[in-house]
Image (cartoon, rainbow, N blue to C red; front, side, top):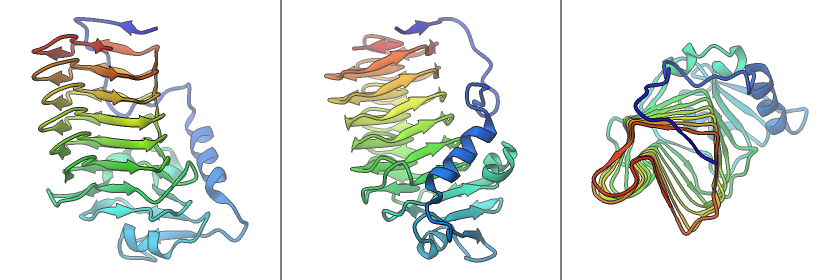
Length: 275
């Protein structure tokens, strides 16, 4: 079931924090799930390591890389490690840390965060702003053959030449929760906010706002996949050529439920949703 609302602008300010997922339960669960052995440690950036990637490099299974507020001009890769990488939002629940802990690509080629080495839900990214990424696919976050957990992040102003301006997932099942995906672009193809090919991603409690795809799925594009898309706000997204300003699903077995789909536009067919 899809709940569609047109000609409205729901309250979209700040991160989509909901009482459905209380901060303490969500974050403590993430840490405990990835915590693993009792000798797991916290690596502080920049106190212990100068960059986020250096913190990941120093981490072992079950560790937490805790990142202080700043703008980090780098790209990161989890290199297959089951670790938590988080801002101080992880320990405080204060969304101000999401806005002030920034991974900024500055137009540098390559996804801002990569999960391409078989990561699973024990690899957790939480509480960052990821902006100004530029890549062929997945300019903000790239997931290939990996299924990490991405939660409470702001992913905005990223540009992919092909698919997935904000996030791209191929043959995997990432969990994306309580994220704000805004103002991302798929320049030549599909999935301005999120592009999916194969796999079974779970997208819940997120806001997809003002994303743009040249062809299909201004907010979300899915092909040959089994996504679960629930409890999201899909507002003011655009596809300029063919199908679905909001959600485009091709050859998918999708669960699309309890979403607010409003004010999306296309020059083709299906402003809000096209199957």
